[in-house]
Image (cartoon, rainbow, N blue to C red; front, side):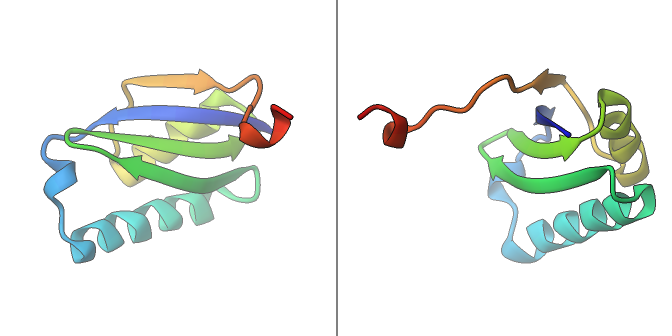
Length: 90
């Protein structure tokens, strides 16, 4: 599977309550479950008006299908090529 970073604009998402974020998470998990084992949501980062989600998926088509099923916007889908971190610098 490939790793993707999805950028989504959701106005005021950064002001959401824990309960609202839980509901969004549940909606995402439901959409993943409906699609099947070829897509996995790893985690998301919430900022003021954006959400950055990291997924493993067989292809971009599945990322788009997830967005439609969950009612989530997509601004950009990036296929991640490599990961670097402080651990590899020594």
